[in-house]
Length: 327
Image (cartoon, rainbow, N blue to C red; front, side, top):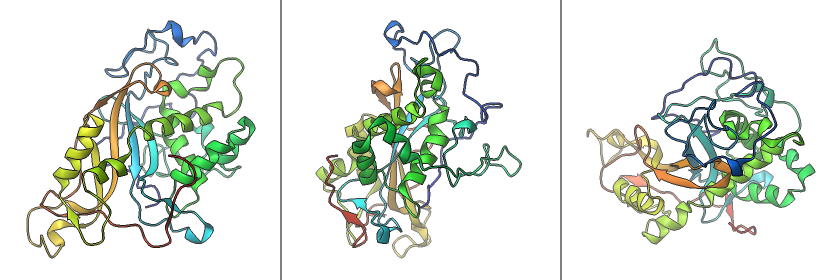
């Protein structure tokens, strides 16, 4: 998948006027001392006219930390490989509390070379998202001396059929610009260009490291295999127990009722385990990582429910390597 750009359960909600500028135009870059703001919960939605939107998430209060299980990258010849025995990082998405979402909220911070969708609202006549042609977003970390962060991202935040930095640009531009707490004004009068990009990457990693999907499944004897199949409810039960909320579990591949085992039946779920989204509310700034796990909104899967219907395939030979950077 290039981006596997959702969506099964949520509904796109377009915020008029939100694409060309910061979420709250004219917001002052002064007086965002979050130690003075009670760390309120991000859902139900908080009123930005009453609380400091730099210190409490007032826009996208339902946080989804998302991961992929890909079996190849499509760029093995370039040395872009998947981390062995680890699900790779996808992103950290800010949905609204009701499960709807928006995207590309600030086109002045558009660093995505291959926008998906190509318009803000996903319709042919919507506001175009211009492809980014400048230096890749990975270079933004260099002035901050974050070469160790860049190395970590090139180990665990891996794209498919695209260079890693282009994928990171997509995740920032489509999703990070829709958080109130990553507005540039929140960084004060001494804001350094792209400071919020570094902050978003570090926050995304913080959430990713809380949910070691591979290890959780392995402890339940659910391991990648090209021969053994698994039952969806066992995967769901394992991950929900560890996280504390029921995640969205995504599958690809053929529909079960088109396979030899399920042919002609009523189970139209897909059969190849591919991704997982963990849902959270945040106290105060998402950057602080103080969260409450919650159940997925809407549908919590598109996978087949029949016994032993799910394949959790091994990675393709030559497509992964043992990480030299600690998880």
